Image 1 (cartoon, rainbow, N blue to C red):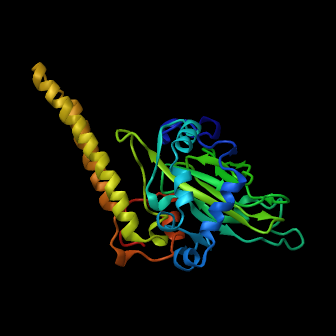
Image 2 (tube, one colour):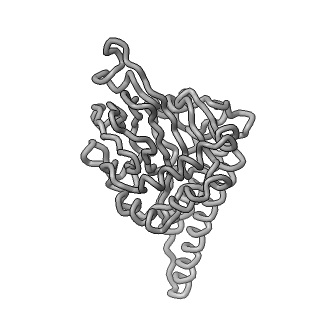
Image 3 (spheres, rainbow, N blue to C red):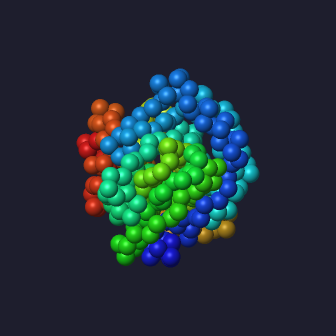
Length: 308
């Protein structure tokens, strides 16, 4: 985070973004692609938004057992946690292997081609992610690809480019806390990425997950129940920890009111935050992501109720 001019306290780890690293073999990627590109999955799980034209979400648990097992494998999670600098867990099952699909762009006379500024040729516009960390896995052969980097906005407002991974490789990005966008690639037939989202495994570490960018492109029953499930489990772990501390205080004849008040404030914050994120379905405008992202980036990022 220091390298891009952002305070470490902005996030949950000092690691802002990693260099590309090998994650899965080419054979594994081919199996994952085969699980995605079936009529059943494409017809029932494809979505679009005003931020990303074509994506596939929520299919893994029912239709991609190899993909699910690969992402949930202990060695995978251990590697990604070490690279991120913090012990991570998959955010929710719905967020395993979210597929972003970009078809080739064709520059005309050099306009919007290589060398154009990042603001002009994004695959997805400037945004912050909903979850603390994401792993972006390349599913395409990048031979001959020009561009395709991720642009980060630094603390000073400058733009830093991070080179994209090759097929089977990935990057880790603390995307909840860093404004970024994926840049369009040229010279290849496609740019397909698989993105899995992560949160801190330790329930006592703060979790700033927001549903801003995913409500309009998700099955709300799935994301609401899964997010409520893990956040209430985390809160229960915090309550259990406070109960243990209180009982220890009672046994010693002392009481730590400062500790309890900090716990109580955090418990209230967690419940209020969850209440803000669970927006009534009637208020969610399907596919409309850009407006709520802009509100967040310009400081209007409170509850989205009534906005989407």
